[in-house]
Amino acid sequence: MDWDQTVPEEMREKWKNLTADIGCSASMSLPRCYFGKTRRMDSVTLCGFCDASTRAYIAVIYMLLKTETLVLSRFVAAKTRVAPLQAQT
Image (cartoon, rainbow, N blue to C red; front, side, top):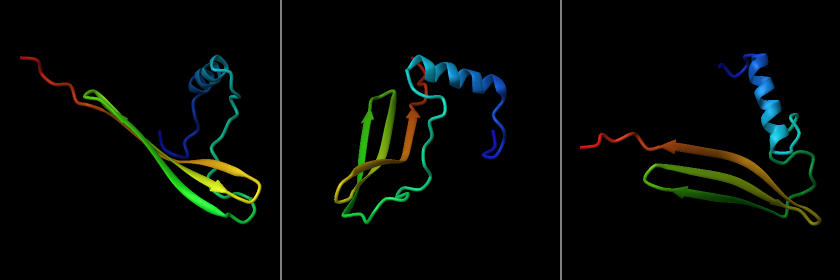
């Protein structure tokens, strides 16, 4: 699908069922702005996590934002890859 294409009803229903199964709201969102309307940042830290095997890997980056009274985390990026199938001899 293209970025601005409307999601088909069948896919929307699958999403609603999935979110209901794991106990979260189907209307959850990922904010596009990392800082939002928060106060002055005392520190900003990028945190990266990864895991790998011979079959697949995943990497995720979060931003940790600290103010005088808050600690917030923001999703930045993620990447997964499945290893190509190898011919058995």
